[in-house]
Length: 327
Image (cartoon, rainbow, N blue to C red; front, side, top):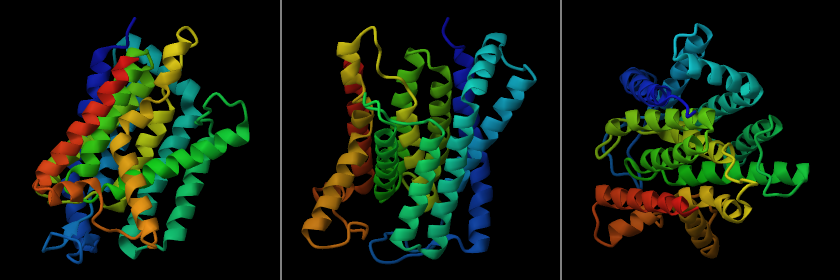
């Protein structure tokens, strides 16, 4: 029997509403405390913009998770949903604790960077520590190689890559949040169709939280995600891409290709990351120093407006995810 659809709907709508409701509060707090993005080079805004997006997205996720846990404990949901979620939560409790601990860590690291502009080495070290925490909890990539050290190395590399790919793509209003929502939506679809209800619920939480944020950020922005938000989005997508079991022993020929799904779902930010890192390296520049050679900037130079460039990349991301339906 499939997981009750109303539980999925509650995950999505709960995160959407919680994020949207908390965002004005976080925006006011950021304005009071000076956690804002000031105008400057390579920036198009002329007044300080609060960096409240990441804080609101995390709040939306946390409130729904806490509320959902309480609803399961008090048996307020559909009995079938309560039974399945209780089993899943009990079985995955250590991993879920590590995942949400890592999410909090990424938000804190990003907020610290927003405030004090951390040195790249310090930020990278923090990302590595969080990725190792997740790998140690058992959430790991294997790629069919039965070697623990290999699994740890690939998992840390994957989390670092996706986190920084989304961080790099936070360069136009709506781009990072929209790409994150689309990718999480495709992961939710695949998890739900395979009966992986807990993964699907988590992915829909992320979709809802980002959809709740986007009206405040696109096409005109009253808030930005900030590094706290882009770190959070990239980290969550990296972890969500690890959690579903794309491989199936009953259809090994097809499902060996299906393990490529995360690369297709995240093709836009990953290819953008590869392109800008390659270009900066060839130019003899540090790869972490920003420029205007991202896909979004190139589309604008080709004649699109900034909102049109973002919409075009959203469409490409949707198409990349649609390719995964083949298998």
